[in-house]
Image (cartoon, rainbow, N blue to C red; front, side, top):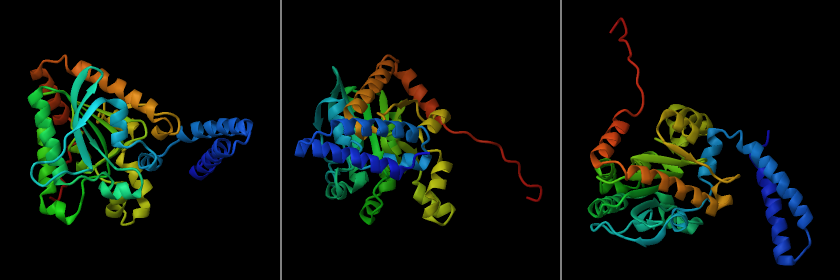
Length: 320
């Protein structure tokens, strides 16, 4: 069975050969072709046997396309709108007007940033109260203009800082969820990387929830669950398995509606192909949703979230 270190070592060799060919002009095309074939074989074997923890690491891979990169590849004529009209603008949760082909819409997306400096500036995609108030403002705009709303989700969760708590981050997320569930326009959410906790749910409680093949969607991070349940963050791989956070498991549970395939090796290996698949999936679901009468759309959304999950009756103990 192929391990991650072997795969990364071969990826580095392929990258080095490409550099030598491009920069130094060396004739190494034959060697490169052999290594690329070997890499593809190993990738097929590795990705056919991914654990849930492997998927978490892949969803967090810094090479994956960021929110703004996907927006620019998937949509046309994106025009960003900023600010929550109270505290200011939050760069971790962005949005504005765009088109999908000829169809105008409103888009929301998390932005993690590229490189450590950008990621710090964007708080690694963790939005605060201003971000979720901005999201509600854009939801209101979508409803007022009768435009569908599309969100691209990629966040480990909402920002947990003291300032966020002081400005009622929990209440703002609750308001965002309430707003999205009651919107009188079609909504589609796509989990493109990490979908973590309430920070993700706030813009993901849509009529249709789609998910990239190697993305994850979970109520708590595996490290957080491991610290609580096993008192040891090293149990994160075990927690990831227990959380059922992978796209195949969530599709089986009915939490998501479709898995969008990624290129071999992950979305970062071919962002354009990934964006094309996202574009087609969104377009397909929006076309179906926009044909529904409003009352039926809202009724189906209510039923979807009212019936989510499962339960079983627990008989009281005899001595209670």
